[in-house]
Structure formats: C-alpha cells, structure tokens
Length: 89
Image 1: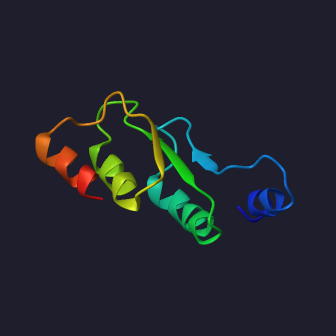
Image 2 (image 1 turned 45 degrees about the vertical axis):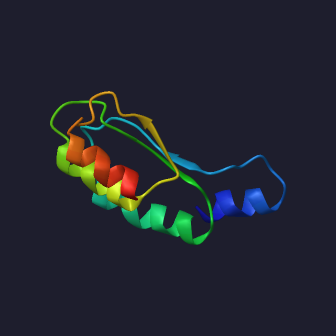
Image 3 (image 1 turned 180 degrees about the vertical axis):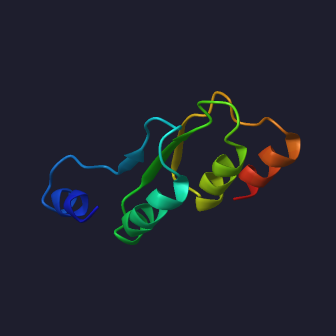
C-alpha cells in the first residue's frame, strides 16, 4: 500500500487498490488491515465479492468496510433488506 501511495504521489498512474482472487483461499479478515492502510493513505479501494455461493458472511463484512467500488457481485445475496443496508452506507 505504501508503494502504491508513493507511486501515486510521484505522478505514476496509480488510482487505487483492488482485492480480487480465488474466494476459496484466504479470509477477508487477513486482508482488511492492508485495506485499512490503503484507506488511511487515501487510496480508493475496489473489492471483488459474490463470485461463488456460500460467502454471505464474508460479503457482509466487505460491504460493511464500505469500499469505493465493488466488482462482480454476481452471486451476492439479493435480499431487499441487504440492499437497503448497502444503499444506506
């Protein structure tokens, strides 16, 4: 994250950070500290989630983080109350 912020500040074309990958490997909690650092360094964050079934709790935590952008979300839960919570963020 510090390298990304440094390169952005030097005029390189860094516009933010993106978390994506195999949702079956790792856990959201292991990536959150780095993404909190990105936020502290004023780097916009994109999160990819909802790519496989059965990750509702992880998706909820990622949504609660409040990234600037979400990617994919093709299998994200479509409950009305879930959507209302997201819009309220």
